[in-house]
Amino acid sequence: FFASFFSLSSTMTLSMVRNPSLALPTFWTLYRRILTTTTQLLLPIAFASTLASHLAFIPKPPATLRRLSTFPTNQRLKSPPFAAVVDPTKSFSSAMSSSTSASSHPAPPKPRRDEDRVTYAGLPPPYLHWDATKNPRQAVDSPHPLLNPPVPIPDPYGWLRDDSRTNPEILDHLKRENEYSQSITSHLESVREGIYQEFLNSLQETDYSTPRSRGRYWYYTRTFEGKSYSAYCRAPKGSYGGGDNAVLPKIEWDGSKETPILPEEEIYLDVNELAKDKTYCSVGAVLPSPSHEYIAYTVDYSGDEKYELHVRNLRSGVDVALKVLDANGGKCGEDLLLEVSDSIEWGRDDNTLYYMTMDEQQRPFRLYQRRYWNASSGTNESAVETLLKEELDELYWCDVSKSLDEKHIFMDMASKETSEVWFLATEEEESVSSSNEENMKCIAPRRNKVLYEVEHAQNRWYIWTNVDNSPNMKLMTSPAVPDSADQWNLLLDSNDEPLFDGSLDTNTFKALESVLVLKNHVVISGREEGVPRVWVYNVDGKQMRKLEFEEEDYDVGLLGHYEANATSIGVAYDS
Image (cartoon, rainbow, N blue to C red):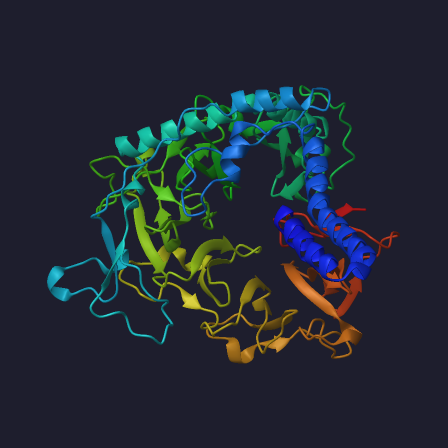
């Protein structure tokens, strides 16, 4: 500013000396130039001064925020980021100070890195005798060959995997991680308790499920206030003088823990008792035997989804955990507990059980039959275990089920896009043999991207499937024979119109979700124009009717059904 001022002044003075008539215009030129230059210089300074005066009243952010605001993006964060739950009744500074004190926690435990550890992807060299099942590989249907030679992939934390859950170093690290988590969230304990109590206030803790007919009994579950697990209950139908065809009467219950739901109520499995003194307890399947004198149930006490298989005598209360058998049908020398999935079934009598075992990836893949499971209880027979079928393709998960009429055992194999079902007639279960590769027969060989499920009634298969590109699922039927795919036909009504053709036709838009096949009726649940529906199809009359409800918007679905000759159905309705 001053340099321009003196330069301009000297120039103007020299001009006025040479020509006095320019004195007044030159002065005004000098004044305007000085005023313009001063304004351009002082306005930014004034704005900056005003902004600084306003910023002086803003509280200074805590040290944690200042550190994070200048944190280099190419470095790894070594401490938890700043977080605060601000109480509106407290000042900003007090909230910040409490948050800062809450963030002073011990450093998180760090697992060691095994820098020399690698895993290989590719074709295992035969001369090294690698276990090919333990190496990463392409999908089974991949058109690309395996990498040859194999490529090493760094795996510094691979040592942390231990399927036996017994490695002391891993268990110690997990313990320290849990302790660290509890430490950094300890200030949230009151919040957790408040949320938990809010959930409890919205629940009816002492409650029961709808009793369902199964043979001579009504079966249902109960929950009790203050207890974490369910109790499995039953009551004899004979209490109502109706025998096996008794109709469930109106339940009159006062809402207390002590009052039974039905007369002569029996708690045959209390999961709260199973969970006593256990750090974890999860019950999978609970199934009464054909005579209703036993129950088979699966239970997981470790959380790794490997279940023990137990059978309980409901008269004596004796509970037997099934063990691994040796080649002669006796227990192995180590007396190992049998590990299964949560999918089990009884055979046609109390002597036979079916269950799935799992591979190293926890995938159910082998179906076994065990006859005379209670041989150790004083019978003259030896326990016999037979492998019926196995699925080695890792894309397919398997389970075992039984038709509602109890005439067939099914092994269902399914990936996300493809499925296949095998069956064994229960009247042939005594003739199965480990040397017979045809113990089970296939209903329809798998076809790429074709899903199907099967039920049986009156010597026919009832199939719901997306075959022929049917996104809404077709309902089909065929004779109950092996390899029946070429005999599948749409189930028709009395006008020879298909009940569910699986198409996207907007005029007849119906989507099928599940099917219940009874002796003389087929009950279908699905959607029509997006609304949940239930239809009942009379097999003899070929007539289908839809269950109607007064409200326009609702949700409806089927309850569990366990008797093929049922003359009534149960639905769950929610408005």
